[in-house]
Each structure stands twice: as structure tokens, then as C-alpha cells.
Image (cartoon, rainbow, N blue to C red; front, top):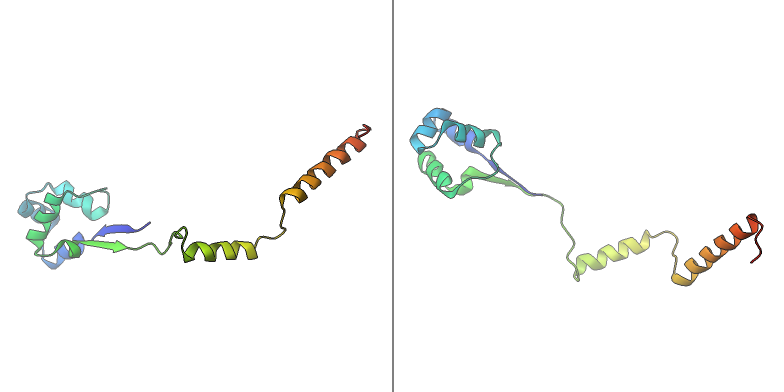
Length: 120
């Protein structure tokens, strides 16, 4: 899963502002700025983002940084799926089809009957 980080501390320090000064200039509560910087906020309102960008003289893209997750989900019906199936077939180990499975189960049941002294 990709992660969005707020680069607020870096931008704030470049402007020489404390958290309280930034909050006052942006019309925000100091605890809002603090929570954003600590990564404890699960979201940011557009109005808050605009206020911070105005004070810090930056674009929203400079305030938000994305760490992309390297994991890719295969696309069904596409080349990813074909490659995934080929890989699983080559690593499948013992192949068991319906008739082989049925014969194996019947043999196991017969073996249990013999061990318990019951005729077939």
C-alpha cells in the first residue's frame, strides 16, 4: 500500500517558523499542525491544505509526498495473469486430477476397512 506523508516540518523550518507561528498565520490550531507533522492525522481538509500552502508559499504537491508500494496486483486476463499461471504450473509439484484423487481416496477407505477387519 502506498503511503502519503506530509513534508510540513521541512517546509516550515525552511521558512523559519515554529509550529505555533505557522498555525497562527494559517488560522489553524497548533495541535492540528503538530498532529500533521507527527503523522497522527488520518486526513487533511482541502481548506487546511490551501491555508498551509499559502503561508508556506508552496504547491500542494510540495507539501504531500507519496511513497509508492512496489507490490503490483496482477491484472486478470492480461499478461500478468498468464505469467502467474505459468509460474504456478511449473512449481505445482505433484499433479492430481479428479480420477487420481478418487482412486486415492477409495484406496485409503479400503485400507481402513482391512485394518478394522471389515470385508469390502
